[in-house]
Amino acid sequence: MVAGEKTPSERFAGAVDTHTIEAMMRDGKALQAGTSHYLGTNFARAFGIRYTGSDGHDTFCHTTSWGMSTRMLGAIIMAHGDDRGLVLPPKLAPVQVVVVPITRGDTAPEVLAAAGELATTLRGSGIRVRIDDRDHSPGWKFNEWEMRGVPIRLELGPRDLAAGTAVLAPRLGDGKHTIELAQLPTALPALLDDFHHQLLTRATRFRDEHTHRCDDWPSFEHAVATGWALARHCGQPACEAEIKDHTAATPRCIPMDGEPDAGPCVRCGSPSAYRTRVIFARAY
Image (cartoon, rainbow, N blue to C red; front, side, top):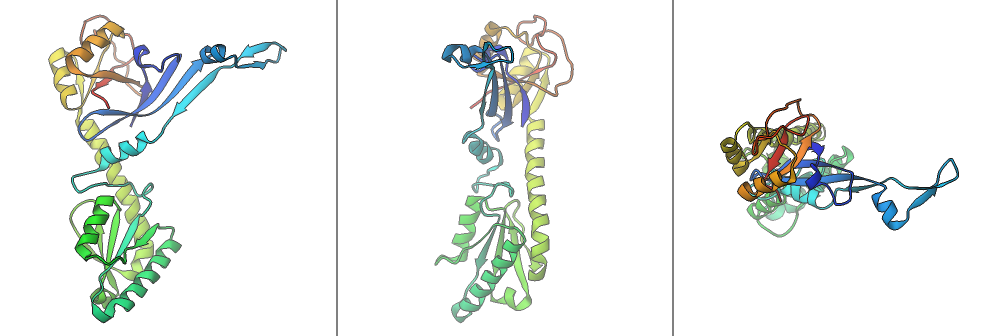
């Protein structure tokens, strides 16, 4: 996410200021994931919203509007998902660990009982656990939970139970490894934290690798075709419209933590209007 302020033409209609958090999706496009608007007294005047001030006179309220809704779910799906389905951050995942019992013949009751005990123990460690004891093949269940984006899958069969182990398969990567059952209550919280960190690191690296500083028009066009451009901008609505007509890119925000940078507008050459470079991108 990048936090910043909207340019005047991108502000919420009637707002004095609009601030936003912009996220890069896996196709390089931007998604406005959340906004806050300072409305001044504009809407208070329109709707007659007043209060009695300390001086005893009626005063128009200064109002705000905040928005962060289901589009955040879309951001999670598009920013972290892959060709196999969802990849959910552990802190947000409804199910953090799924236990898949591998049952064969008369071993089923023992394995299912052990899976239940394991789930109870893990819940005691604050982990959100689901046991998949449905009448489907293990392969079908593996695919189902990968598609649902559950961070960690545990496979527990008769041989694993006899050895006091389980097979652990994280959603990121293709590897599996064996882990002792006794280690799981303490190991899984750390593994889930590491998984969360991996997702953040991967998304941040992808954003940074697809964000380019642009000082000329050809490099700007190339940058917004696959990601974000950091460019100086004159702030003129007509120039923004021209940029959009040529590239489909719009100014996403003036980054709050942007480094001081002044110079000619990347499109028209007029002096830049802002203290720093502006993020331009195609957007949802």
